Image 1: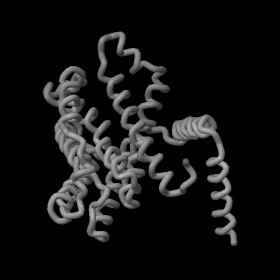
Image 2: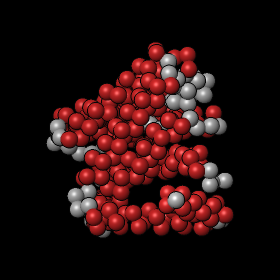
Image 3: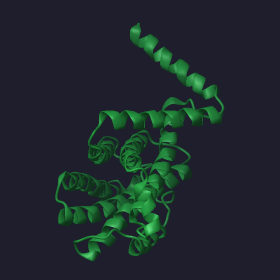
Image 4: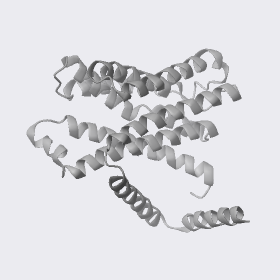
Length: 266
C-alpha cells in the first residue's frame, strides 16, 4: 500500500511536470542544479572527492555495458567510435597521471580503460554482426584533429616534460566531446536501447560531479581562474569550458534517458 501510494505520488509529480511550459521546466532544472551545488558545497569539504566519484561512476557505467553485452549478446545501439575515443583519452590520461601523479586517479583510469578495451573488442569481433555501422558514421578525425590542434595551442605549464602538458590538454579536450558519436548514433536510430541509456545516464551523473568540482572551485576562488584570461594564461578557462561543453552534451543524453524511462517529457 505504502509503496503503491509512493509510486502514485511520483506519477502525479511527473504528470504535473509534463503539463508545465518549457520555461517552467527550465527554471525548475536550474533551481535543482543550484540547490545541488549548494548542498555539495556545504556537505563535502574536499572537492577532490567529486573527481574521484566521477571516475568511479564512469567505471560502473562501463561495467553495466559489459553486463549488457554478455547477457544480450548484442551491441545494437552502442557507438564503437565513442568507445574508441573513450579508450584513447583514458590511455593518454593514464600515461600523464602515472608520470605526474600516480595516485587514486591512476588506479581509477586503469580500472576504466581495461573494461573499455574489452567493450571495443566485443563490438569489433565477438558481436560484430549486431553492430549498426551505418548509424555510427561520425568521422573520428573531425574530433581528434581539432582537439590535438587546440591542445598544441593551449595547454598547462608543467615542471614535467612539455609533452605532458600537451597530452594532458589533449585528453581533457577529447573527453569533453568523446560522447558525441554516441549521441549522433542515438539521434540517427531515433530510439534508445535500455542498457545503453543507463550507461549514458551514468556518464551524465559522472560529468555533473566533475563539473560541480570546477564550478565550486571558481566560486570559492571568486572567479580567479577566469581572470587568468587577462594575464594570457588560457589553460584554466579552457579546461573549464571543456567541462561545461561535455556537461551540456551529456545533459542532452540525460534528456533522452529520462524521456525513455519516464515518458513525461514531450
